[in-house]
Length: 103
Image (cartoon, rainbow, N blue to C red):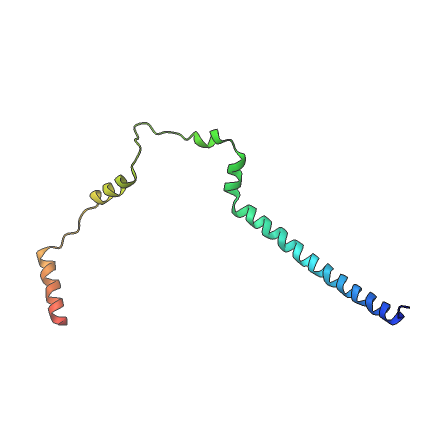
């Protein structure tokens, strides 16, 4: 026959385990829900793009008189538009004097 003391000990273990399971459940479920809400918030633009019509996204206003810009073209134009720095003779002499004093 089963020992009554062992049955009581088994019931206590089950009660302790169920208490621990409840605690883990009540702690983990809100954390999981918050994590899921954060992911939805973080990737909202990508997710909303999935559910909108593709035609609406492709219809972008076109500026008249504009032409497509090639990838290498924009950097060349911006470099050409920058004024180049020039050092005048007087400034160059002053800098040479400062360098000579340091040596």
